[in-house]
Every structure is written in C-alpha cells, then in structure tokens.
Length: 210
Image (tube, rainbow, N blue to C red; front, side, top):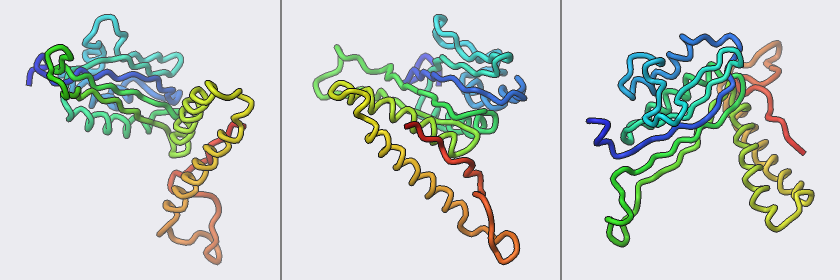
C-alpha cells in the first residue's frame, strides 16, 4: 500500500530519559518497528518526519534523551509497531515516560461527509519505563495534573489535597495487586520458606506527592 493512499497520518510525540549507557545502536534497534514501518533501512534514514517542520526522531547522546515529534502515514497495523517499540524502550528507559500517539483520518472531510458520518481520528497514550512502578508513577502524575487542572476551575489548589490522596490510594492498591500477582507461584525463599522484598520486577513503590 502506497503511503499516499494510507488512511491515517500518525503522529508520535514524547520524550524518554534513557539510561546513561544507552548506545545509538541499542536505540536504533529499539526503534526499529518505527523506522522499518516507514520503509527506511536505518534510524538515520527514517528519523525524518513526513512533515519537514517537525524535528522527527532525535537522540541527544549527551543528555541521554530521546525526543520524538514524528509523523508517518499508515494504517491500524501501526499499533503493533508501537507495542513492539514500547517493549524495547522499557529496557533502555531510565525513568517512566509518556508517549502520545494521534491517528488522523486522512479520508474524512467534514464538508464532504454527510450528516452522521464520523471521523476515525484516535488518540492513544502509551507508557514506558524500567519497572512497573516507574510506569505507574508517570501515569499517576499525569492523572493528578489533569484532575487538579479541571478542579481548580471551582476550588483553590490548597483544597485538593484529599483528592490527590485518594488518587494515590488507588495507585497504591494497583501496585500492591501487581506485586502480589508476581509473587504467586514463586518458590519459597530462605530457611523456613520466608522471603524478603518484592520479586518479579515489581520494584520500588511509586512515590506519593502530598
């Protein structure tokens, strides 16, 4: 399928702090699902966006930072490429990060479409991170930001501590459930079957902002 006939323009936007030992070769392999989907033979070849005014895919080796503002023409199968990319970036990420993906329906024209017709535009928020806790942390921070911004139209920010505490409680419950699920089926450790710490990559509990 020619990219000119693709039903979507797909914009990927985000910033990921990478481990200090991340090499360009490792990043190129992690991002292979993206540049290969674009028909490129390497990251350098596929880093440019479909739009010249967008910076595309940039790797700041000094700051160990991946910055993405990149558009490709494609179809729904691009979602599989995104899943593969996120799995690979988890191995390179220093901390949790969010990646925004917007699907713009290139076939939809508001003026030409009849009444009742709907665009297939879609928005997806993806998360990457070195541990489940790191991913939950960025999810929690974004949710708190959204809720506080909405409620500050009606309440002073100082009044919203209880709301933030409830959000923290929900994420703590989710984190504990994750750790417990990872512990199920693991053999007992140490004398008498007693173990210590959390296994299975649960990692440190997300920090709570008060």
